[in-house]
Length: 397
Image (tube, rainbow, N blue to C red; front, side, top):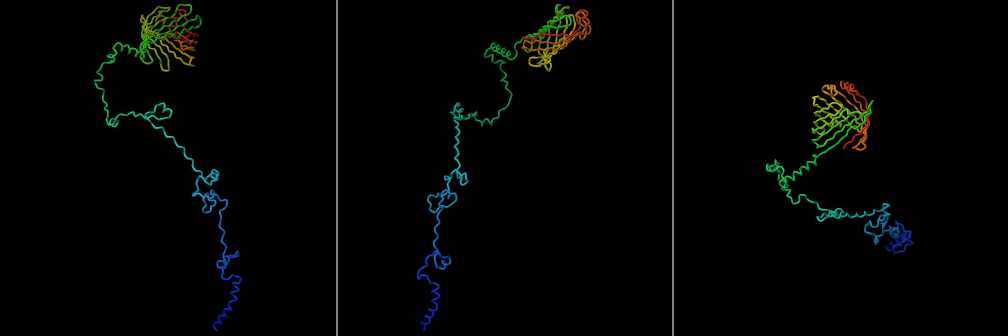
């Protein structure tokens, strides 16, 4: 009975199961099918085909793999352990894909070592460098810095010797000659000069005249023998005025000399001898002045002053204004002099220095006598004054 029930139940349930697995091979694993879906594979009804292994792109090269553009397959023997700079080419570096290695710095040549045997010739060629010389080598500077040198006056023994100690070695005569030469070479030498300041022809109204004004000196910087002369007259007549002065000149400063001596007159009138005392030198702005006071052998006191200035237009062309005046302390009829201002002259000359030693000039000069002096001259048939055209030379030796 029981067997009949089980058989009946199996007979009843069998058709649906057979209908569900119809077509499946019994007792065998499901075969892979191209139509197997993941749902059936998950229920064990089929098996999905194995996916094909991925292969590296055929264009992937170690260089592109190093740059990260692709990936080489595992186990690739040629893949470097890390992207090295040695594979970077200039073209890839220009595209920014890599960076070229920095060029190696050039080695700096070492400076030549300083040696004591370095010669100056080798040092000049840069082959070596001479060793610095220590000026205090061998000195105990530490001890010197600690010692203070006292400042004291010179001991008396230092001045106790003879004034000219060299005489004891070389002899007094030899040293005297040496000192004389040394003194002369330092300014105590004899100098001399002859200056013809004016040697000119004067064109006047009436009779023409001439003037020679010269002076010379010889001596040292301090003391000199000074000679002066001036000659003036009209052509065709005796010398109207002539004088010679012999003076001792002593420097009283850098620019002035004190002069004293004698003056002798040798003109047309009575001769006189005068004591002369005066000064001669340079005022500021290079104005040359010469002034003197005269005491004649008859007791007359007269004076004379003159000044001139060289105004340089060029180095060779010079304009020289000049002024001269005479004074008398008393009226001297024998000499034709009134008291006070006796006469004066004002002129200007244009000089051209062909050389410093020789210079011709031309100019005008106006002279005039004053007071009783003017009357004396007219009484003797002379002019009381007037304008002169002058032509002359100035030279010196």
